[in-house]
Image (tube, rainbow, N blue to C red; front, side):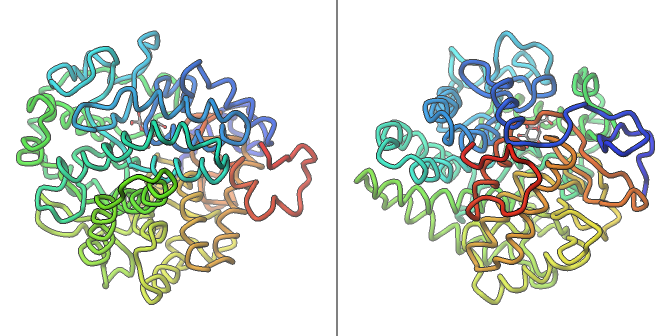
Length: 473
Ligand code: 2M8
């Protein structure tokens, strides 16, 4: 395994220069970060690296605002849904016209090629994991009757978001939405994409000129490679070439995948929206059909008996992808597996590849540590992500795997306590194993938001050296 000796990790005990001086995590610091990254209508995921509004980030971030400022929680979601396309597509980025330091920018996306894109708001032309229905119900649980008014406004937009996925992203009407770009998965640089992206003729990649901006603010060792970006940019060109007509893209693109994380969040969001519909006295029949179909389809088509976890289906190649990634455990969140399969998932999660019983690692690495593709520091190829830990915590609790859930929560909190609010973290505890610490952007919004939310679970944290810790956020 390659060691990133020159990478500017943020371990305060390291001899390397720290990436950031953000210091140890505290609730007060989390709230400061969320306040600093708020820009009037939405919260930037990270001030320099991600200055626009991102789709699933806003869902996670809204949870933290619910603790302290409910109007801001609804504002965050409303700002995102203002950019919803007439098809119901919820774009993965809503651009802030005054921010120019991100690539690809609105000009590159050129979504006005589609008659369905909003005319007055700048957005990308693809989506991200549909967790907003889950967040809507969570906001109701936290705010009670105060949530009913805003929920009434949001509910039809959430249903339209799902309808888009069932009508425009499910070519065989199987109940499984497909993604057409790695950026839609949320786990953008996962080794799961190596095989499908590897089938693209390299000659096609050379035709697109572009200039990355992420490497101006974050170490290249922790970001996707040039080759990865060539593929990402090429797939945007495929969408543009089809004028964002999704049927054409699904018929022609080399990248059409049914992803277990994306579909598990869709499934869970259906389940939660059924509850929201009942609260609002709305018709839930369409949601019930979607929910039953997707739950069954994940459990039949995406389960890998051989691997003991859920996997991806590559519609272009007509086969499952033989990879073990963290996304394969997310069906726990949606209550998809029965007790037998859930127990197998737990066994896999506790195997050395996912570090479940290893005391020398923080859980949960985003990719199988025993795979040659594992990288402890590169964006979605191995590091621990706090949003994934948050989702897994809830998935494990759902099945009564409380001991494991508590361990995942404690590790997530410990990473932040020790290294600050990073975008992601090496799973290693000991520098002898490889780099330790946080990477990517410092002062990362969903890390701050979910740290506050995890602190508030389990009746707050029992032992703590930090007197500032106040789970109410
Ligand atoms: C990362 O993705 C963006 C592209 O969407 C990027 O690398 O430029 C991913 O981690 C994604 O899941 C996340 O939503 C986004 C903003 O935090 O950053």
